[in-house]
Length: 363
Length: 161
Image (cartoon, rainbow over the protein chains, first blue to last red):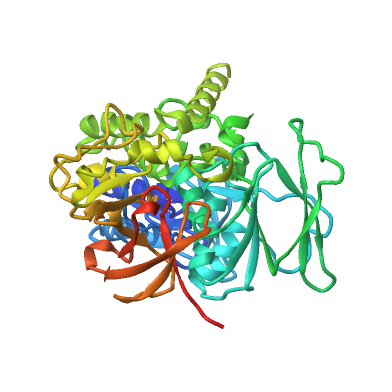
């Protein structure tokens, strides 16, 4: 069984940044990802990112994935295994992996989980019809494999993902017939909404989907208006014909791996659901087990990258092999996170992080 | 209104426009009406005409006396929220960011659209720029009637039949 100083699970924005810092500190580093290519969701993101230069603002997501990977190429102490799914982690930090139908085990002194999040789905009549698809899968289909699944689309959810994916689908040649939002305000950045509106895409707030219509495949959706208590208003439904229905109603952190080691977790609505509890060093309630990125709270990729750097610097310290620049880098990235969260959109995250910390201290 | 429809009010639009005297040469018009953590416009401006302060979430402010109308900010804005505008005689000339598949060429007649995506008139494409630094965001120079100055936002091709 191969042994490593640190096993980083997940090669998205958080895991890639973490791998760089662990390698710089000289740790024998293993980076695992279940996909054929590293970058996580970044590789589907054809739009330019927000933030500042430290978060690769104005760079397209797909190019950020390349830039983060390039930073790893010079290290001989990183082993990268793609198409490798972690199927179990055990108390003695043995990590069980599945690669091309072969199970393997490795041993690590520390484990850093950066496995991201999964999409939420919606319950409605006929939601299993073909051509009803999650936003992540639609991006994979169109942006990665270049298959456009229809001519027209309706999007459920006006968060940043719903807005951005709608825009991307228009770039791929689809017509977006409507964006449907249950809340009374658009969830994502208004600049994204304005980009779509000026191209003629209507955004319907206080509305939801009642049912999907079609026999062998989706043909239309029935949309209905909601009152302030999210109850359907009778006689306000209407039919919108569409080839594709895309669901983008939020993400849930993937806490299952840390829970396998009985790391304490809590349901924190502001962070997106069940998340592992963390101390100030991104360490779970199990010594040597660390977590960062969307799996500890749903945010933007910019925050996930900053957390990846920070968590890795703490992993290095835990393994008594501190990063040579830790003294400067830790306050630097903490300040970056402070800046990213120090606004209207960050207030919810900060509240959630405070709850996560209080729950950890109460243990 | 912006929060519910994605369309800013005329008051919001007018609050980020400069007067016609100032617009005798191209100036950046930034429609960033929300506090979001973002600053590529300010960082990319070669003459520091755009200020984002005190925090990363603050909305950008353009100093029209400093802005040279170079258009660098137009293609770096991830929100496609920046265009250049100038007034020339009875016309308004814009340089807008464009990322859709439709292609345009100089002298082409196009529909002028407002912020709700409605056709409000016709315009003429003056130039199309696709420089490498724009990173796949085209900048299209369009001339429309001056009456559309605060209404115009983007274009669509005119397809007959």
